[in-house]
Amino acid sequence: MGGKEVTVRRRRRRFKRISPYVIIINIVAWGIAFVWLLPFIGLFMTSIRPYSEVIIKGWWNLIGAHISFHNYASALFQHGIARGYLNSFIIAIPASIIPVFLAAMCAYALARFSFPLRSALFLLMIVLMAVPQQTMVIPLFFLLKDLHLLNRLYGLILVHSAWGIAWITFFMRNFFNMLPKEIEEVALVDGASYWTIFRKIVLPVSLPAIASALAIQFTWVWSDFFFALMFLYSPSKWVVTQRVVTLRGAYYVDWGLLSAGSILAMLPPLILYAALQKYYLRGMVGWATGKG
Image (cartoon, rainbow, N blue to C red; front, top):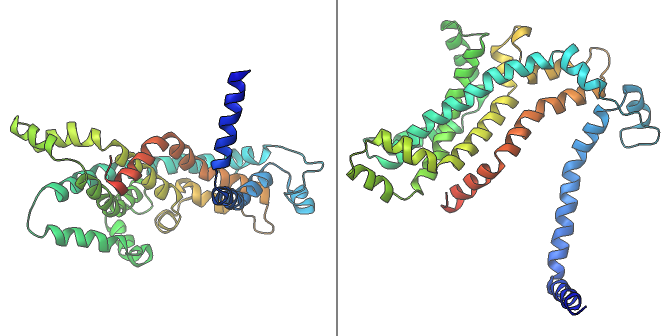
């Protein structure tokens, strides 16, 4: 009994120590989270109910609701979302790996080596990050046409890879600048080349930052609609974001089907983020505070 009383007293002391401001902040935070999640809840509830039921009762009315995943099956196999998935993966996977690897080498050179116009090159990359897609689409269109890469999946891979190198270089350079140089200097004294140091020392230590860059780049490429709309015009090569648009009917909108397609389109980035969450958070915190 004595042990239970001590435990109860400790809990009461902890409860008394909780500031009213902390309680208010938690209530506000949960309220904001609920408001932020409310559209997704509505989207999901709409996706698992028949069209007539959503139109008449609304997604929030659960009385007599008929739950079904027919909209998901229809979106995947009857309206081409599965084909869009395949095309999106063919584009997004290499368009994430290639720029991260190339940008990591570029960022390491900018962080560790001194050479003419290094600051100008880095400034140019920062400027390129601010260039809107719309200003580059016409020259990119004619470039891909001249290279016979228009309406080709690997043409879009090159566009996304080139577009991602600038911001990933900026991100990785800041991370490399925060890594201690002592280990690399010891390896140089032992006769290791810069390539060996980069491959066997720097890259393994930078895994959190690399995972963060991969997750962000993959999400950006997967969610892209503008470049795909401009450079892919054959329906067999459309990506998932283009396929979702086709779910909107010509005469009426089946909100359940459209909601199911939208959720299917957003699933891969969410799954990737959940899988890389530990590394993603470490990479972002390390970039911000200098702890890798």
